[in-house]
Each structure stands twice: as structure tokens, then as C-alpha cells.
Length: 163
Image 1 (tube, rainbow, N blue to C red):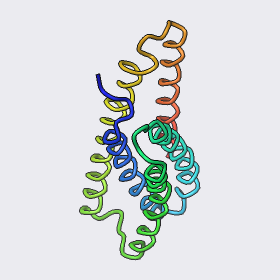
Image 2 (image 1 turned 60 degrees about the vertical axis):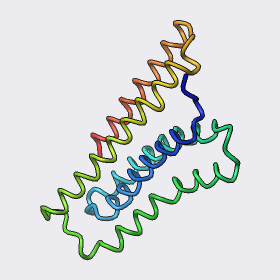
Image 3 (image 1 turned 90 degrees about the horizontal axis):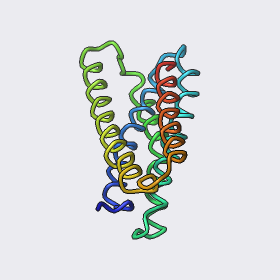
């Protein structure tokens, strides 16, 4: 049976989220002024939900020291502002309509989405439902778990569509 607090699986999840957050930071800065307000609101909620999910996984690591947990959390906390700094650095030379730029951003987004989907389904969802607290849960707790999962999917989809 897989361990629920495997540091490697949490690190893979964090790397996917960090990579994704860096791209979000760059996108926030290079987006046009008309999209900035919408993106800020969406990113605040998006980062909050990602931070909650990652924070729970980091806090459950029983074999990792508090210092390492703090370093892992700090990596997530600082990466979006770092991406924004990179966006500011390339803002004058950035051409969002350039074919190479569109291909590069699309490839990075797809890579990031693949990592997030894999870690979400394999590392998080399957562990909770197959090996975690929901393994032997009753109908009410399982129903609440499904409701929470679907609610989160809908909320993030609405945020994504809105942005």
C-alpha cells in the first residue's frame, strides 16, 4: 500500500504547482490592461486553492523536518511573484502574437497541465479515495467527498472560463 505522506509524491506535486504558478505570474504581467483585473481576481482564488491543497500535503509529511516543510511552503509562496518579476523583465520585448511565443506558452501550459492532472488524479485523488480516510467511509461521508470534489472542479472551471 502506498504511503500517504511520501515526500517524493508531495515534491512532484509541488514542482507541478510551482511550474504552473511561474507561468501564471508571467501571464499576469504580460496580459493586456483589459484582462489584468479579471486575472488578479482569478489568480487570487486559484492560488488560494492550490496553496490549501499543497499545504495539507506538506503538513501531513511525518518524515520531513519543520525546516524542510517551511522551505517547501516558501517555494510556493514566492514563485508567482518571481514569475511576475520575469514578466516585467520581458515586458518590453514580449510579443504575444508571435508564433514562437504562442507555441512556447502553449507547450509550457500543456506540460504544466499534464503534471497537475497526473498529480491531482494519481497522487491526491486516488490516495484519498483508495488508501486514505475515504477508503472505508460511509455513504454520507463519501457523498460529501464527491460533492466537495465536484464543487471544486466546477469552481475552478468557472474561474478558468471567466479568465
